[in-house]
Length: 354
Image (cartoon, rainbow, N blue to C red; front, side, top):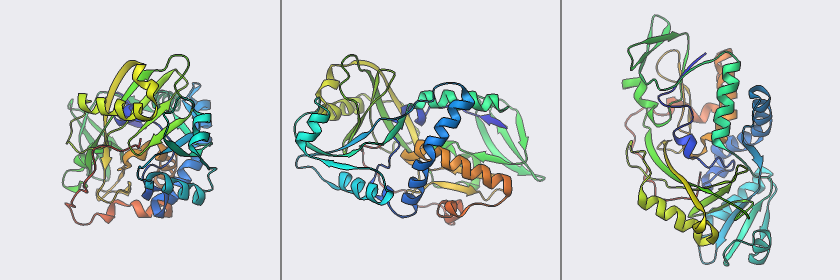
């Protein structure tokens, strides 16, 4: 297996991601996507354990717990949908009053009740990336960073990739999982993907830490990590292939987080990051055979790519091995886009998802 990455592995949307392993939007708790999310959550513990064994290093997975905050006089949809989804998923959950919330997290500002998901997990995406690269290398995979693929083509029963440096790679099968850039690799066989900008801020927590649990509201999220850093984000905006963090967005992220967790305003700044998620008109992933023979597509996971990754990888590997795509992936088949272009749905500027 040969993996080609246009940058450093995990340096794009993965690096900017919170790594929170729970669905974000209300629609992500139900329907075909909800069923997939449920299976994806169930796949994570075994995957994290296997990855740690194969890589021999920490992979950043931990059951930290999550609070979905309902600020006084704010829209309750974000929290209520999570409560209904947790009930349907069989995920432990508990509704907390404002007094109970502040007893659990004394650093919270007054004015929030919450849904507690005590078994919710998160993964440190940088540690996960290092673990994946190490495990794949140990298994014999070749990873080539900093090499851009310009085009994928099928000729004579083989698949070839033309690289920016002039080389060509050939294989019996190819998997395109290039995020927002995936559609462009297929030329006229492309798909209606659009880059969706996500920006985040990383701070140094210090002692005492401002919070213990992951906190999410409709306006933003805060994720404490065991390495002493605090992730805050995120934006959700279509601005083309512009992936540099903006000063105004960073200001808003800090302000939104400080509104419910005031201590973050005093923490030391480490970095601001930006990444481009692959957006799809119907909000569903694109996983399955492309119109190009021998080429599979794995993209369009939006903000939930980290959560989906173990299940998606397992199902795609099985399909490539036995030649049959599983029923779980039928709602996400690329063939559903029979007419291109499809209008891209409008996305708001900010949201509390990962």
